[in-house]
Image: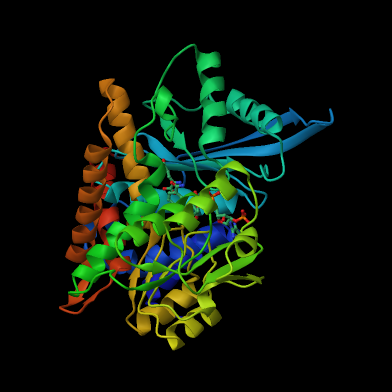
Length: 450
Ligand code: NDP
Ligand code: 2IT
């Protein structure tokens, strides 16, 4: 456990007491409190306005019943959520997650992180998150459609282009966004940019699909460049095999790195020859169209082995890109990875590193970028999708990619402004937290006690 000051300890204790049993939310708040409470102590206007505690309380939480009929005619029921966390700098914005593990704690942690992340994007986006404990895995397209329609029937009462604009996250991709958009349009009789990640035929933006993964790699490129290094020839571990993992791998290949792992919740693929463009194409078809399991990769490519119940953090790599889910990189993994010579961790997922593992990484002074900085390219490009919808125009692939790159560069320099310790070391967690906090806090003060 890191050594906390009395003020940090008191703050975390208060939030923990008020949100007992919400362990992921408490974890996210603790990580922020470590750097923000001392900053607030030095800046009295934030302390007097009690900003940080106000930021820990969602502006609104909506919880609702989602009934639907499965393919055998049975009536099922799931729980739907939308956490509208903070609208100080723009309408609530953040993804929807469909996964059996979804609960209020997980969505509050994600919404809390989203507030800081969206502030870092330089765009006018508040923070929110939502989803359901529905599991799309193994369901037919028809079942997924029925669920999405029922979910949106209720959610549509609470969102809107100037209120709250959801997008995808785990278990919510192009298919689910399409079904939800269709239902929103039918209920409201309005063709609106109320969701992002839409299909290219109906208001989506080029590069949004790729944006989170590309952004993570652009961010790591900036970190390496600040140390006169590059991705060329770097051996990389990537976890997950969904949207973020796929496009992290794509950009790593393009920039001359060698990704050697990919995973899902059943285990991990290690490909000693590296994952090239052809193999990545196979992964995309397997996961996005056939909805198969990653173990099948090893049946297809002989250079690879599937390791059941194993994470990608057990192999010798230079850099790690956790792109699956929260708390997937723990203390034991971190020690193994550092022992194997890993020099940097760039988070593609939200809070994939446990707090204890992060403390080890910090002590060892590895390069480390928190998800709220390095995975912000996804929501930033959602913001660009909203701009295009408002203009009723489409930008080219080159234009969106250029803007994404510029946003990742600006997040990086913002983090350095508040987090640079010396010529050789930047604390990106501190940098991201303070840079994200200041903008939201100043807007909250300007708007009074609301
Ligand atoms: P996808 O649903 O496309 O893929 C998720 C991947 O993570 C799958 O390979 C899945 O494996 C794996 N996974 C999910 N839950 C677990 C678990 N409990 N244990 C092990 N593996 C798991 O989601 P995304 O790629 O969109 O999201 C991945 C991460 O990135 C999440 O943390 C998300 O919040 C974050 N993120 C996503 C953004 C986006 O634009 N999509 C933007 C910013 C962050 P399996 O199939 O076995 O479940
Ligand atoms: O965690 C995230 O930033 C996302 N899932 C994307 C949110 C968005 O609104 O594009």
